[in-house]
Image (tube, rainbow, N blue to C red; front, side, top):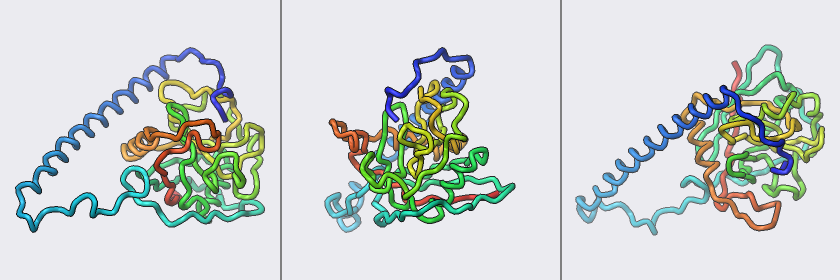
Length: 265
C-alpha cells in the first residue's frame, strides 16, 4: 500500500467539514491540556532545589533509560508463531472489542462483526499472543500507522502468520470509507493476501485516498481521549527515512504493541 495507490482527491462534503472542525477543536483542547501539564511539571522540577541534599532525586544518569518510545520500556521479546489457518473463534450474537496496549498508551477499538473473516482472524491471533511485543513498523504522516509484521520489516519474510485469509469478499464498496480511525487489514495490494498486518487511518480531514482493497474490521473509540492521545503520540514519532522500503517508515525509537485484550459484550 503506497501513496501511489491512492485515488485522486475528491470534493469534501459538509459532513467532512463538520467532522474536521470537531477534530481540530478536540486536538486544540488536548494541546492546551498538554501545555497546562507542562507548566505544572516545571513547577515540580523546581521543588528539589528547595529540599535538603539528602532528599534530592537521583541524577538523570542514575535512572534507567527508556527502551521504547514515549518514555516506556520494551516488553518481553516477541515470539509470533506460524499457523496453517485461523481457528473459528467468533460466537454468534457477541459484540467484540479490543484494547491495544502500546508503548504510547492504550487504544480502544470496536471490532466490526460485519467483516467476520477479518475479525475472526484478528481475535484468533490476539488470543494466541501473536501480536505481543511486535512493533509499529510503519508510520506515514497524515496517512496511516501500521503494525502486525512478525519481524517488523516490511517486505522481508515472514510478513504474516503462515497463511493468508480470503478478504476480498469484505472489501468496502468505495475508497471514501477509509476515514480517520478506521482499522483495516494490510495486504500486498492484491485480493486475499492479508494475514496479520493491520493499519489505522490517521488522515483527519477527508478519506485517506485508498482504493477499496483493504478489509475494514474496526474503528477506534473516538469518544476516548486516552485513545486519541495515544494515536497522536504514535503518529508524531520520527521515522528513519532513506531509501530502504522495508525501514524508511519505521520509527527511530521503537513503538511496541505490548499486548491485545479482547472484550466481549
